[in-house]
Length: 66
Figure 1 (cartoon, rainbow, N blue to C red):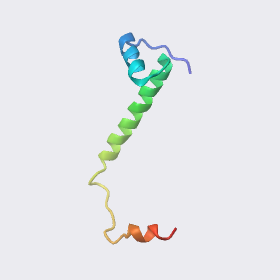
Figure 2: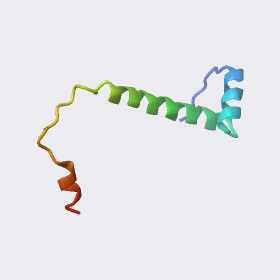
Figure 3: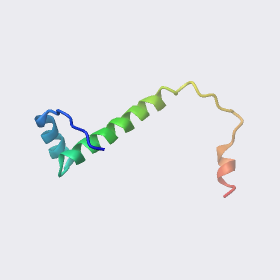
Figure 4: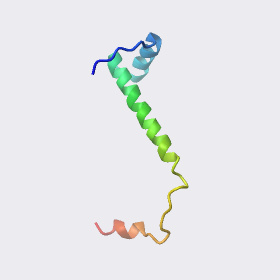
């Protein structure tokens, strides 16, 4: 999908240098992938303390079934 964006040339150049990307497209793609990963991590941390678990569950017992 072709998209035209007005991006800051200094930011793109810095992203390419830091990330080792050879092209602007590669730098932007990598930045978007990292952005998505980080946002997903934040969502996961928001679940801490909200998920109930069974205190009787024996995870070690289930490991040995393999």
